[in-house]
Length: 233
Ligand code: APR
Image 1 (cartoon, rainbow, N blue to C red):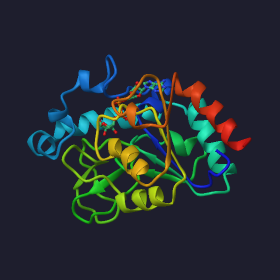
Image 2 (spheres, helix red, strand yellow):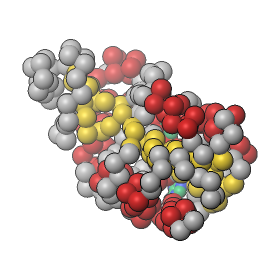
Image 3 (tube, helix red, strand yellow):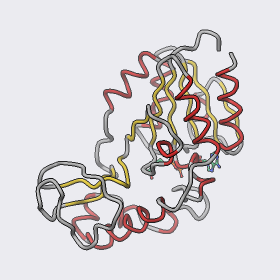
Image 4 (tube, rainbow, N blue to C red):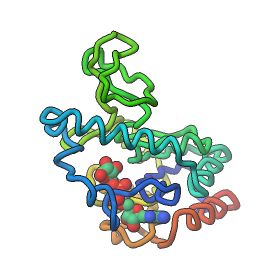
């Protein structure tokens, strides 16, 4: 641990579970309640935009009633106090990392509180619904869609993520099942680069075998303990 200077942290839905936001694949998770094909593909949006817009309007409203938990707060503390490079790459589309105070955050799957204008390509902030087809505040067109990376679409800022992995000494994966690529492949990219790897998850993820070390339990317990360890090294 003493030679660790640059850290890349990948977070998934498990880090927000204790804030009351459903994960995707756990029992009773979102993908048990909704078919991916109906709400999370560009084809679904073309086929039934109202169904898709209502789904994300409901989630956008819900996350604004949730609060960051101890895991988010611990990562914000690490971000504030860590002198080396640090990048929190999140698959989550909620804003709980930022509301906990974290700054060095990259949303690779988009953000609920942004919309994406199909006319001018801007991504205006949006806290209200899209179902009523509001005009884009930038260009005035009623062409806004959720700023969410759907299945079959390219995640955002992959170059920055790989550049950070190349500089990293430690890769930590928190609260993700390892079911969705390219995020699920980062641990192997890190290993190939000789980066130390650590998994913090409620249970072994699909990629748990690729990690040098894995700790299992709730993020609200594992993450603050790990952050104290790193900061006290
Ligand atoms: N603490 C730590 N880990 C937890 C907790 C918790 N309290 N609760 C659940 N987990 C773990 C689960 O064990 C599981 O491995 O979090 C993981 C959640 O997995 P998924 O529901 O598959 O979510 P995620 O990995 O973030 O999904 C990846 O898939 O649906 C797409 O784009 C969506 O970003 C998402 C991507």
